[in-house]
Image (cartoon, helix red, strand yellow):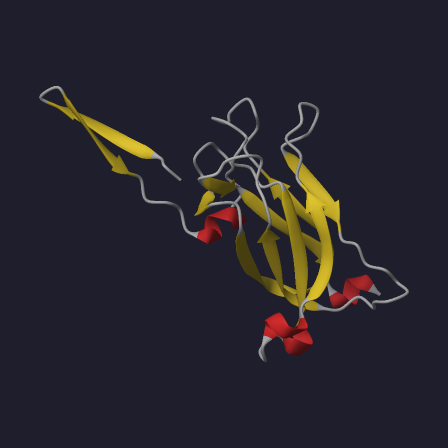
Length: 164
């Protein structure tokens, strides 16, 4: 994002861009202001390789609380989530993604800054698959034309021996 730092010398102000955080920062628990992954515009993908295979049942997105945020327009708005089954993990994983749902992160006055979304699995058309990775596709934000800030993504699920 257009974050800048300034230094003063001889009554001149020099602005220099602050280097953005890498995408993995969105996997850390610190959601203090400025501790986010920023990307240009409103569209991006983040693929997370899970520490161990799970049956994904929900996803949590976090933004810094409104009381701390500079503004909330840069928060993700609409997004989709895809599970990447372990069976196809090493051989073209994007060809075998399982859609887990499309969701909306709200910044309304009554919305919480931590929001959890249950995956949308229809038992009639889909058997839960063991996932080794998950892909978050951010489709829009809340009005910032320049950038979107993702503070934290969490993936929830059951391990194989605990799921059945």
